[in-house]
Image (cartoon, rainbow, N blue to C red):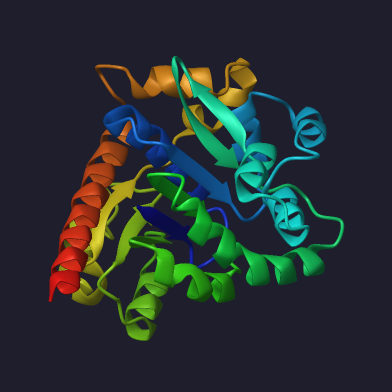
Length: 271
């Protein structure tokens, strides 16, 4: 299963934090071999995942990440070795998932060109190795989204609870079957909650699978010096926060949708 997360309205809308939480939840729930890919640099998230301050993790990731994978792919290296060299294992207590991060680039333009050229090939290969892949796209990577959408089982669009942006999106976007909407930094008390959006903007509402609230504790875990260990503990609590309750609801809906798509594909193949 490949799940792509994208914010069409701009940065800082919770795509990275939500996808990493969904990735963690998915591993705990189903114990599937999981990969989280970042195509853009996210300072807060990377500090969270590694439990390290900025300057430390940049040095640690010097020879890791998606740009390293692209360099190795261009050099014709065996793809199993590409994965081993470029990914980082994130430990969740006794469990783990793989992270293919992004780091700051000296030549951003060249990186973007190589990403468009090689990433679809890498993604197509990764899906043969991993059972679940989450792809965290930057908000300005619309062209890359269009290139890799064909490989995705689910495309998640993260929208803010903002009337003008929701109205604009509703007028401009025709939703495809595998495209779903998540309201980010979600507040139930807002007038623009899921119930009202389903009524006022049915084009978006029928594809809205939930809302994920903002969580300071989640994105500030690096300051605790525990990184993924804290994330694992938080996810495994019997009395989960509203953040994790919503992540669980959305995670189960994505899983059900993916199974339905697989059944549909098998039926088409038989025909």
